[in-house]
Length: 215
Length: 78
Image (cartoon, rainbow over all chains, first blue to last red):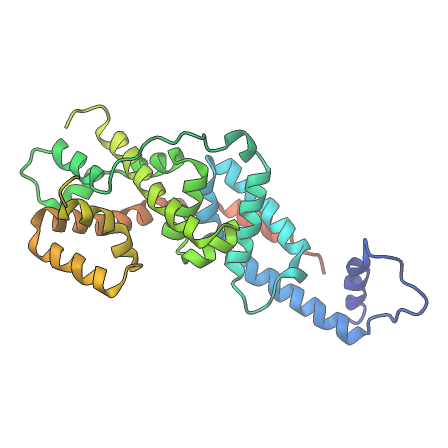
């Protein structure tokens, strides 16, 4: 145990300017504290991995992509742990890394087209589902005409910029402010993208559940 | 000029109403409309159930155990 802090000392200095003769070596207590903080950080981050994965899984198109993204995210988080401020929202911090990595890798080819489909209003999905039934069913059971696949498939069809916000707020339970910080966009943009994103999602669910059936 | 349609207005306000991002006055107005309008009330109840349904639908795919092991393997060796 007594040699342990020096492992961190070496790693901590990798990539740093050469230590001048006047620079004092960090003392053993300082290094031990840092090692303890790092271990705690890593444990906290791993404890959140299920929640981070749930969001990651729906930010990207496939399970494989989500798994790659999770590994890249955690590798970077473990390298950059010192830049996390203890006491702030670690889940949001991890997701900020994840969304940045997601934008860097591949999102360039999948930019949201300039012309967005004109989405329907908020009542569109209900109207479609209601019209597709026999008209005699309980209104509270209309939602049961949707399947899990309708939702998951529809979500993957929502353009990225809108989907990011819908996934963070409606699935990840982040506040508008957290989502704005994670995506580095103004809060007003979060609100407008959320509004449109939900409508686009409902339109896609309607198409999936009712298909080309005419109401 | 188009005539004011309270149901169209309610439809526009539905998301902010559910997200609680509107003023008390707007909220009172929305609630008054929902109390008296079966058409909008049905759709409001549906929206509430839909949000729950979407959340449940996407939570049915847990993180693979192997991934958890891989993430733990990325930790700094002691």
